[in-house]
Length: 182
Image (cartoon, rainbow, N blue to C red; front, side, top):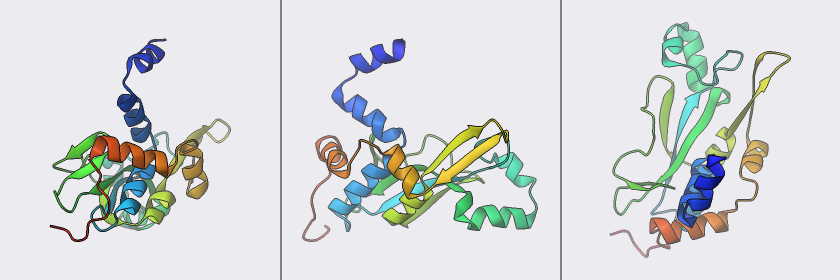
């Protein structure tokens, strides 16, 4: 298996970075924010889920075909939202920070569009509430969507805030509480 070879050849940082980008970005953002809440407020990117369809995420073209009331339902009912990425904003430097490092703009691999939005600032409860897991239900032939604390705990199993904070301090240059922002 080439994947195991790649992991075996990866540095400690590369392995940890992959962990925090594979669903544990919320743990990292929460740990950094709680370490220094004034300097590092949190934000997240979310996307509308499309339960009952053959797609996991609601495609922008599909969204356009919905009626106004259906679009409103997706927009304002967080039960239709799924967390895509969590990050913090360094108030001192203006940089967005995630497991990959510091960025001059929002750290998302995909462009924001009709169904992908940014929410800033946010609270840790928002990130936990929107953490989503989707599994294909063979019987119903649809995606089964679960979210919330149970999913957050399942996804972050084995990862705790102390480990995330150690990573952030070592590799991302996170600093403790400042007496005042400069």
